[in-house]
Length: 141
Image (cartoon, one colour):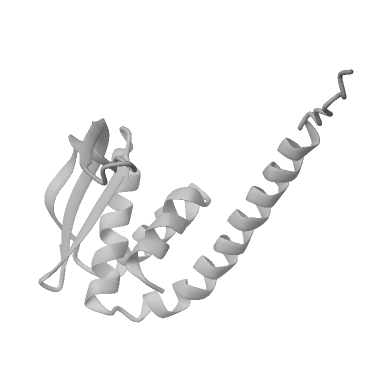
């Protein structure tokens, strides 16, 4: 599983998964915090369709954190003010960077959580479609 997909699952899924993974690593390994969770701003880029030129939509508040395990650095960045989640993501990222044994078991848990996220999205889409209004056109003579 790639880093982007793993991070999306951890952010969109149950909050307890990221906490449990991070606790598991903290109990067995030394986690050095390089950068405490802190807020920052990120510029959002968009591409204008007609001229294909880039422009900035605005800024997004993020919380970022960096940790180190076995001389390998993990980064956690999440939108909004979520210090604990940013820290957990950084620990999990460092664990994957270091190739720790625990990460092999996590893949199965992340796959199940991915299925739950997809199921929840489908249910939300179905409930949204139930409220969809069908407009019929009338022939005017």
